[in-house]
Image (cartoon, rainbow, N blue to C red):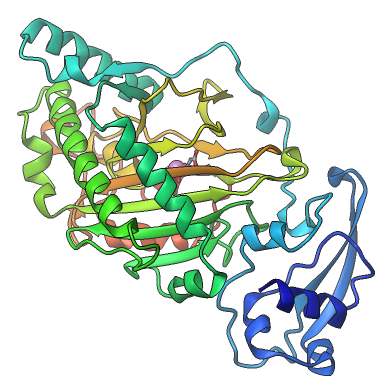
Length: 411
Ligand code: OGA
Ligand code: NI
């Protein structure tokens, strides 16, 4: 990989400047300089947001790019490892508004004690249930303590994720460039097909339920991931029971209505390499998650920020907690009572940040609509019915525009 980058940098004569962002397909298909030059037109930009850094980058020439569709944008990991980056390539620079920089350092997301939520003592349970209702209603985010997923398993799954990213790019790229619902998908940025700029994040998405899938390498990855996913489904199952009850519904309401035994579980492993100027870019843009609930664990670096009262609240997780957030389908099901909250991930200069999210939702072809039991004349349905599959497609086909995809199905 490194050898190929060296070759390409000479080919497009980047004059020793700080970035060379090349589509990956080119590395496979083009090997001589004249071919390179006809495939590219070069452009230069200066960008004041990036400290006046002079950037030169290459874009595919639409006239000569031919039929070879780009397979995958260069991963951020490769970009960082194959260059001495002192600034951020202009494609990754995000224009930020005043609101984007409004941080709240005083607020903290709520904490829910899982052992109380599942306690045999009814008083403890109902107290925890009220706290859960408050967290889902006002924050859409909370830290879950005493959840029963061991620290060892959490550390192992993060280690295995790191090992996956340490594989050769060729190995990882076996899972790149496929279709939206491919069982395993390796990629970069957020939604490069429609977003205005790129984001400082590589990802691996794996569908692990109802059918379990996993990359074959590294060797221990599959087994550790399966164990972690099983444990997280147990936690989710109990949380959803608590949520059903907190809504005044029967404990198994959500399970039955959404056929959760065959529900979908999607793992997203985010890899955020260290960034020379974290303030000019973003790991993940403001977004909401689809699905009912997401569980998130991370290595020792923070980066998640949650929108609350118009400000961004940086999340500093308690040791050994799991972060939980309600997703778009919870907002639809509860007709807006429990919110799917906008959040984002910022990057840092120090080291690689890894986070692992597991999103739990109904089976892909289940139609989701507000629960009739929660509707009334004063509270008519606020969202149109849509299958989980269609909803995911809807999100992928539109740029974020700072809005939740939910706005597209609001009545
Ligand atoms: C996500 C997400 C946050 C993080 O993967 O949807 O919001 O901190 N991740 O990585
Ligand atoms: Ni998210």
